[in-house]
Image 1: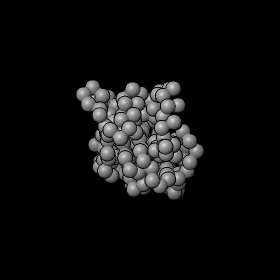
Image 2: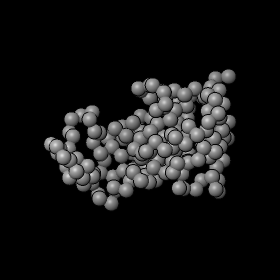
Image 3: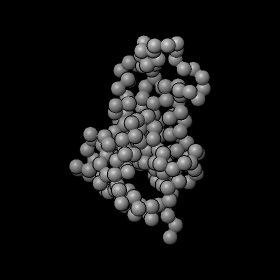
Image 4: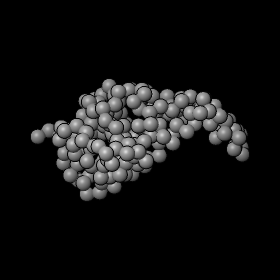
Length: 180
């Protein structure tokens, strides 16, 4: 039997959802029997591959690199799952949105608090240009399933992945889809 190709991605967020994913503990061994992990922060692969069956995408779209990456991921992935509250709503990452632009954040981080040579990094590849508004994933590309939580607990992740891998879709309801 061919295993499904599986990916996890971390955009603008804290990586707490990936920590919760790792809390699957020994079920990760079972998961490895069901899927082939082709891309993730926990493996060393630099380019997102073609024809990924399932992807958990953590974090909000906060900068130009995230924007480009999420479009590529959507184009190369059959089932895209917004993984955690930042991906689903923007959550903490989007707390800067009331400021209307990224400029006050850059000002505070690189100028107001600097001790030596205050300046906002401009060189390409140093700090990706921030978007003025942080966006949840579904505001940029279509999402197939949503897995809220900050972070979603391991049992919820396992339930969703087990159902999706079995071809049942998302059977999460009630207590399993709450935020926070």
